[in-house]
Length: 214
Image 1 (cartoon, rainbow, N blue to C red):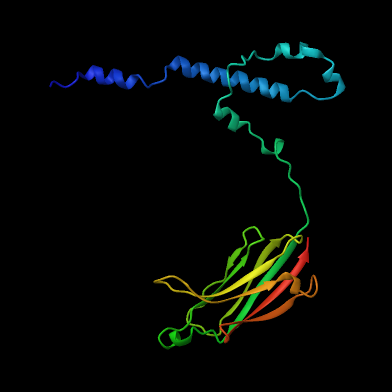
Image 2 (cartoon, helix red, strand yellow; image 1 turned 30 degrees about the vertical axis):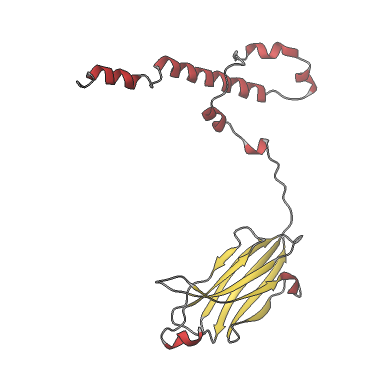
């Protein structure tokens, strides 16, 4: 069979194209709709403006109810603060300082690989509640002295999950042990409190806590 003539293929492509006149009409509709919304929102709600009647709207651009506002125009004039109300509430600020580790061991793995420890802190009740320390390569008594901040809600339970991890560049990181620290164990607000946590019965990590009310 003979191939279709070139002009037929070109006509088939033009079927899906939007005429220039329709594009211009859509743009004019958006401009008229935006002018109507901006003019209506600028009117005050006091008694003087409420008693003027419908005469104030005679100067506004005419907008047919059958012409909807395009999604692009809606996104351009979208103001979330006109829909949602933001409420600021007090919170607790938890400052965690990972100081040092002692006798970090992976058991029999220490015979062929010196530990590369780091800590992963998780506070599920806090926004951005996951923090990591740096990796201390080939150290059994690492010194971190790294500080992290968590914003927590005092009206709910807040438990800090502390994971001692072993870094592995070729495979998955290995979990040495996990301990939990409940904020109810903090003795006094605004006073630094030092705690020592033991993992796998041998490894120890010193962590300092400071809880403040904001």
